[in-house]
Amino acid sequence: MKFTVIKAILLLFIVASLQAKEVYNLDQLIKQALEKSPDLQIKMKEYEASRKRTDKMFGYYLPKVDIHAAAGEISSGDIPIFPNYKQQETLLMGTVSLKQLIYDFGKTGGSFESSKYMQESYSMNNLQSISDKIREVKSAYYDVLRAMALMNVAQENLKLNESQLYRAKKYYAAGIRTKIDISDAKVNVIQAQIDLKKVHYKRKLAYENLDKVIGITDIETPYVIQEQKLNLDDIFATLTPYDMDLKDSVAYAYEHRYSIKQLSSTLKASSQNIRTAQSEYFPSLYASVNYTRQELSDPKTILPQTQWQALVNLDWNLYQGGSSSANIEEKRIQEQISEAKLEFLKLQIKKDVTEVYLNLNESKDRVELSEALLRASIEKFNQAQKRYANGLSDYIELQQARQSYIDAKSSLVIDYYNYYDALARMYNVIGM
Figure 1 (spheres, rainbow, N blue to C red):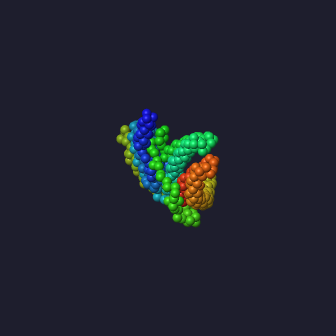
Figure 2 (cartoon, rainbow, N blue to C red; figure 1 turned 90 degrees about the vertical axis):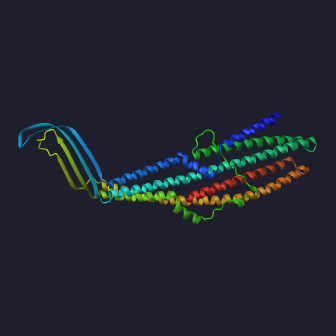
């Protein structure tokens, strides 16, 4: 009686501990991952930095305004028309200058467009990382659910073996069976306990992997996953279907995968870099305005107090050792590399979509066959129990039938969650 009370108190304590934790579903896990994952934060910061680089390049279209101020002592003398003139005085001077680009044959425009396309590239890279993170969360989530379901199977296996040990003792006491049946049943109970411990630690590891994917650094997991109740009798009919065939899946991936959009933007940026490099052959045209005000301690000085100028300037480098042509060729090679990378990525995506598509259909078939195997295993196990109870078979036959039933049930659980993991990968690989 005392042991029962203590056990009940411990059970209440465990339940209270679980209730103190947040219960997360899949959508909440994804939300947590998008908010907390350091790898996603890195991608976001890279994208934000690319936006600032675009703002910086746009600034070259706008006027450049500078202010210069100076104060000090100046000395003047040996002026040809005033040979005996020597003077030292204090100078206060201020200059305001403005420089505005008029036209540079695409140098600034090419740089700005290249920066915009690279910003798009970083944006697509960020979105691809988000898509990959969602797939990782789903996979880790299904790992936890799979471990939970396998724990239920392991607990059922332990109960079956404990029940058989109890029956073996009763049969032996009644003189119906020999003592070796008791020994075999004890061995099977211990093995079932070992299997349950293994699954228990696999569940802990599954939670730890989910913590890593989400970005939770707490030693103790501050949440629990709502256990999914599975109806294994007709589980194949509940599978979420995937409606596209392989051809449509590949076409959809070519159009929607963020990684393709990323490389497409990089290719456009490479083209603009060629435009920028070619503009080095041409001049830059810009306007400049300068105004200078200076105050001298001697009002009789011959230096003017104010000066201003408004100019239209042309800068043209005619030769710089062949670096311009080399730069253009380098940019063209970079464009060719980007084109090759894009084509290679399409080949890789086609391969990935095909592999995941075949794996998805294989997983679906395995669920259907595993369900049929479980039904047959249940029937065989029931028959073996009746044969053993009536003395028509030995313990080995009963144990084999029970183990086949447990293995079939475990396989169905594994195949069921493998299907949903494959489905998550399918949506990820096509960019949905």
